[in-house]
Length: 459
Image (cartoon, rainbow, N blue to C red; front, side, top):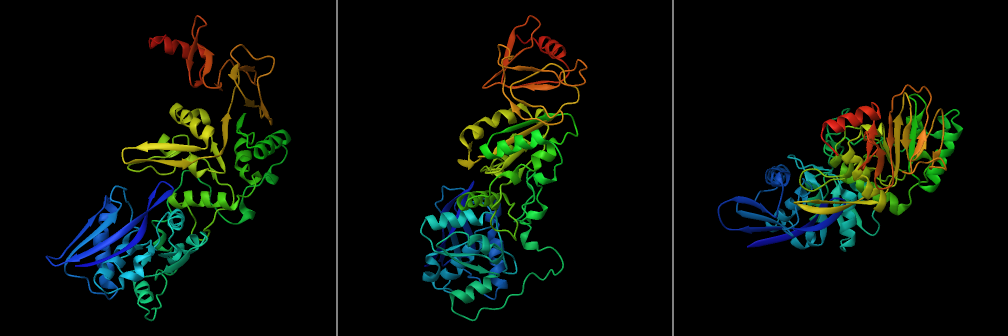
């Protein structure tokens, strides 16, 4: 019996769990079994690894092969285990010294030609490996700069399995040319970069970032942005179309201070897991800006998805700005789900496959364009007419803690939102009684809404 092992990392949200990759060869009919709660992409590693080993000039062992991923109770997904599986198999076949990979952590996907392709989540994976005491890390050459952000570890970036075998056997390292697709986008990044939820392009060029200096006038609105950025206050922008609300919100991240080293690692880890980290910028040191569309679902906002949850818009805006354009168009469940991250700065998501904690400490900025304002009841407002700042209810507030606002061009149409701490209280019944609910959007007049509710038989 021949046995070898090495290590890789399984990602659970933005946290990593060190996984031991074990390979066992026994006499018997040639077969390849992979066990350890693997998903479909990981089960397909059997074909990728076999082809990569053969195309790298090595002989595939024609015996009964079993590869185990422990701990078996942790769900494992993705193709980042390919390189570790190949090294464990070659060590079990005595092509490599098992001791040379025993204390090494290996992350990377293998192409059929033996090239090592980058995977998402390298930074949180290396952080977990460093916390577990591992000091030798092997990754794809494209993600080596990202892995080197973690102090105290030695990172080796390789282009192919042939190069890694030569390094481990002290043989001359072959000179692997870069991707042969000259003049075309690097296909190795196809699975590394995924479309985001309205996340602004994280470019390192400061000259192309929206800046408040581009705004002419709007003195009161500029002061409101400066106060919000300095004190970390959430902002509500309201006014007629074309007043400059979206333009001001896009320039709010430029007023925030640069991220500290620890904050930069947090933000970079989240974007790496989400597949939004630019290849040429391994560290994000500026506050992110995320502006999801109002049709975005609740799992995409707070995090979730099939199987184990993935970061949502609130996590992608961690340490930055989350901008909700046309906030009344968002579903009520989505707006209600923002309460937990706004209070605690994190999101706890539970699924059948497991639960996880995702950081979500952001500055919320919501925008609402009002064409014709009548007597709208709001708790806080920014009257941009053409510019303004946040206000709280003054002496003229009603018994319910809301403030009556009269806007220009009153045409008897109510088009506002009512907000109140905890629950909103809006008298919407014919007899003046108050029906409680968490949020209410007044669109076509309070009278029409009351008739609709009465027709549905609601109290």
